Length: 267
Image (tube, rainbow, N blue to C red; front, side, top):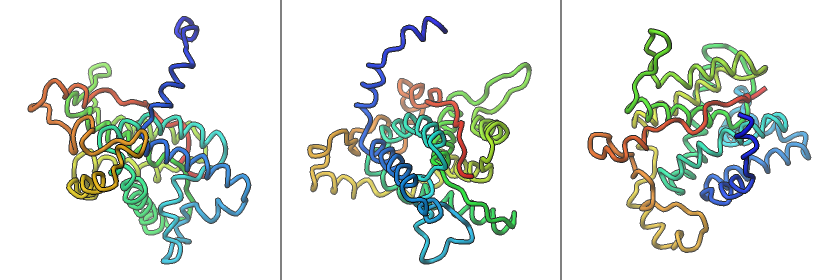
């Protein structure tokens, strides 16, 4: 452990950051901008957080803004630390346009709607939530499903535990160890990640034919640095089936890029 620390090379982190794809950079920049703005503008958290009773026709924007908002510096820092490697992996697999469309649309709207439904109808509460950890657990659940296809179980003692349950264990640990976390919010994010990993909501992704036309018309690959095109994705639009491409199946179903989130979704 000490030797690994002594061999730590900041240049590798710098190189990794400079190689991040475009959508990952953009979303991270917006998260940082929201944190800075929330410090300068005290009214912003109340305006942007997902407060179930405050969501109406004129405030539907809350379903898109709450993942960018954080309670404090450490909340934002650790969420970014967890989010970036997972998001980079997702964008490298599906491309920049698909990633941007999903994370500025359904991947915020659906977990938020599930949270409002659970909080208001089932729990009869009105707890506000905020934080990128909703996306962290969404991405972890997606990675867990990919891992499950190639490695269905891990063994603790004599007990076989399905690998797809890993994010659920992490959510429970975080809810016990980190104060003021939203267990319901994290579970809603993970639920959408499982649905995506099972390919049940892949129809939410824009049609690939249209994306190719947009890319070619606007020459996005030539104009935008770090852009990941539809035709340059690592595994293809919907992944590679292990039976059809064994050389890639191990990579596609490899270990999760980040093992957990240590921060809360909201206060």
